Image (tube, rainbow, N blue to C red; front, top):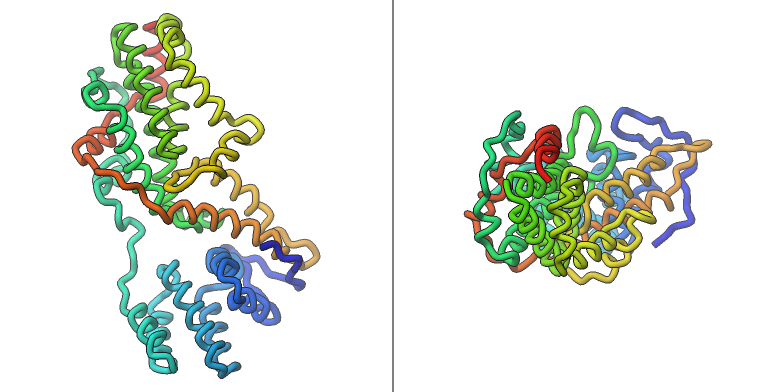
Length: 386
């Protein structure tokens, strides 16, 4: 889908957008109204970097006045509907009223009805569909206590590894499926707007990694610590089977932390167990060597449903968006912009197929409500045991 094409002119950067001069809007609209639906989807994701929603809608509506061809009119209307369906939050009250007005002018009854129905939709909250996570760690933004009452978490010992892996995947999918492609763009990370949905996923990754460390370090006996490590290796194997790479790496990160690897006597027991070979294989799979080459190859071959490693998507998109606003002699490279779009559409493709998992809400609540050690407490605890 690469395009050997550039926009040529002087573009004035603003705080949040780059507003095209009028001469450039037609070319932008051409990209929107292309017959290539994938390119249109890319432009819907990326356009805020270049033009405001109001200006975009006005420019699209101008196309209806300039060309009365019925097929062209349908293409314009369907593009607007696709935009509204994917990013309804872009539409302010005036734009919504425009959709309602437009529904009275369209010849096609089917499109007119869709436009009218879209105009009646309620705005979606950024926090919709959080389900069982709505009143837990992510909503409360609770801080980790300075001191922790060490106790055994019975759910880890009592529940089968497949059940735990299923519930971890259910939690991860709930977070992952709510991430918007635009959350990865650098502009969303400005001072005025925080990519809350993406932040929650990152917070959960760090929480899960800390939880692994905590559940190992709270054990008073070497044998119990080794048993917990081995169980987490089994859980990691199950997560790999489920293609839940984000939770998999979170657990491996916890197991590989220095405060765990330094437990010499504990690790001697683990290394004698056959599961240690599986641990080595999983570490090799998710290794950051060669920019996660093994993982990238495995992801390419994985069938859905699948949850990719979110951190790597963040890194990849940030590298690309670093060039998005770089203007050399008034030229914006559309080909480079399409590379970003390709990456974001690929991420979105992983969100299409859900997992068929029977949720155990009690176990989910126990997991997400667990207290975890701070790095300082974990370090001090690891120094006192072996």
